[in-house]
Image 1 (tube, helix red, strand yellow):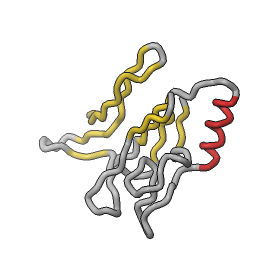
Image 2 (image 1 turned 180 degrees about the horizontal axis):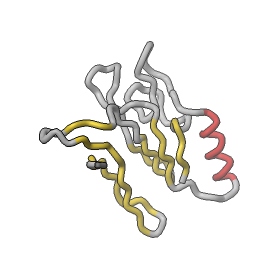
Image 3 (image 1 turned 45 degrees about the vertical axis):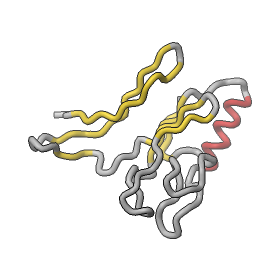
Length: 122
């Protein structure tokens, strides 16, 4: 499993893609080239990257307005999760402060589910 600030290059070039560029002139892959190379090298050693968890690119898009980006992608045997949710801390109707998290469920090295949860951290 890899935890990174931004996801790897190579997962699409459309604004709504998991790490696509949605600002300025929209479009283009905004992923990290070094991370893409690292993943290739790890797999080249015969190892499996089960998941890459990163963020950086917010869930809500600038272009098109009011759209949301793809947040979870499986490529081959690897699950890519974009955990960026802005604002990450929000208040519910009762005024409680809640924080956004992703919860994953695994069995025998396979991710069975990804769930977005809001947690009262106080």
